[in-house]
Length: 290
Ligand SMILES: [Zn+2]
Image (cartoon, rainbow, N blue to C red; front, side, top):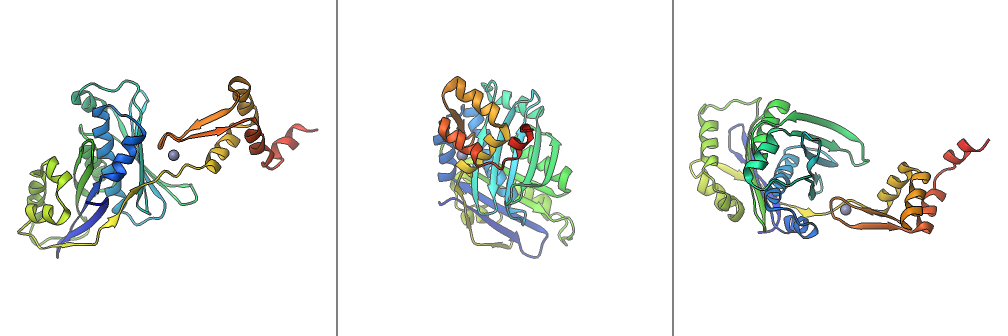
């Protein structure tokens, strides 16, 4: 299976859904950093979830899903762009040894969803306290509380793949079959992680909802891509200011900035660093000159 997201709908009903499968994209994240197994599962699930959420929206830019711990360690950041590229990272001060530890950690966390415009400005942010002890439960709660949309989400991740299914009942429309939503959710809950990870969309949907009239749309490709660049690192150094950068160079001989998503190291020797500030408009200089 190639990495993709596929929308589907239950004909003539307000229920719609999506299925996502990530393999190469997920492996690209794992190749760049070694995560403890518990954290790896959580991050893979969050990556699948981020792709599902991004596909429910019409937007240009990036959807960023962040799960933040209470201590206040940032736990996970996943980004999915409207072009179908994803990146993800996780940080943990002390990785929990077992799944119970993850649940406890999620119970105290906050979940934020941010939309970033193509120019880098932030256009929307929703934050909720996490309810539930899994990424799926957390986001189902988020969707209900923040968007008033009833959502069912199933997620799975292992060392080779991440996958997810989302089902939503659109609030504005009515269904003449009042039990359909409950029935569909119950059927979805019978799905095993191995089926979610391993079955092609068509097989999976036929197996789960064979009595329903489903329409499956074309799959949209997804892939890993990190948006870091030398230009972005340069603007970050400019924000730090020449004094701060100079003090790092005095101490370490150069400046090294590691991208927290792809772990690429951007290096600036004294000449590079001087060039960064030489290119800046003379605003800060005129400020100090009298
Ligand atoms: Zn990067």
